[in-house]
Image 1 (tube, rainbow, N blue to C red):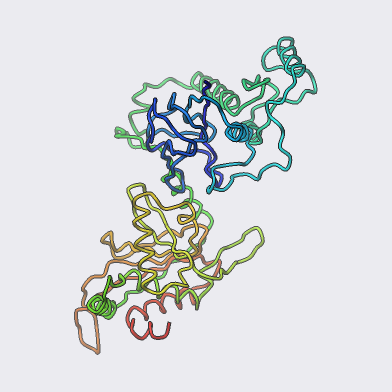
Image 2 (cartoon, rainbow, N blue to C red):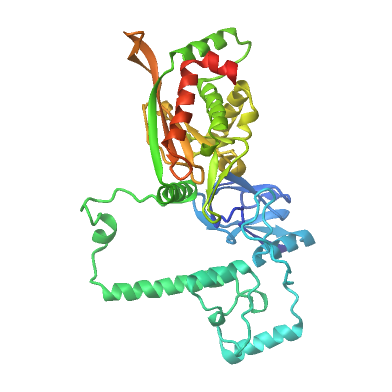
Length: 448
């Protein structure tokens, strides 16, 4: 019998932490290899984490709602015997080999030569113990390289300014682990905080923690930026700081579009396409005519990269926050095909089952903020895209038709675009194309 500790693996794309949403097992449960043990939320999506061990759950490390770092203990499993594959998985995970959960990619390239772990000879172990006893914890003979295998640990130490030669590793044969570096960082932070408090006048806890210093108002609550909210904050902040955006908008008579939708629903044997799918079809056609808005800005190479095809992102408000799942190859789908994918993706986004690829592959975003009951919005571009089209609510308004004031169904379209990729003429041309298609949908569909 032995107890194996499974640490939170690298879930891909450089993510360093995840929020523990809920446990799928309890202490005492029997778990099979590859069986899911926890549901975690990353900045990309909610995923289930499978166990590499089979056995009995001995301990759950962490409470639901807590944020866990990659490499932190997740579960302890009591096993009768451990397969070589499981041992290799744990060794590589601790060593930062680049191997991660299948389907989630890697955050760093795997090293070209893998150092062997756990292969120290008795003579080496004795020499290490002797050096430790002679030089004391954290000291090594001059010229001896600190025993660190993981490039992740080295990078963490470098960024935090921790001198690895001063650390005594707690791993096998004095191996310096991620936890050793994090402990050193925490110790440095504590010392720095203590020195800072000693140098400043002492304030009451209420003045520091319970009251906003600028306004003097009591603080009701503090909400940490974690998981999806943290990712949204970083993406939108980067968009605002990097993209010189401009906004243009137009009011559109959508009466004919609603009439066509009603006719399709009346004649359809199944579900008729929704208004959003109809507009999406016009958007895809407009991007084919104005490819500058379906592009990327490669700042390193000084190029604007036009994309061949459209992955249409759909801004969706969920209980977890704003996400943008994308309809892959939207340019290849009919209006009914777009409708089916839009319904599937928005449902998956709200249920938290959309994949990381679906949430990060968009090339242009369509934002239907009309469902929120508002008419217009100067949206923020979903970096690294270069444009986003907003669709407001459709509402009855007075409109001039043939010199007469009549009641029509009006919607406002707003286009926010990156001024680096095009000027107002291109943006206005695209917006006018979509607007004209909405006002005369039958003619537009005949030409698509």
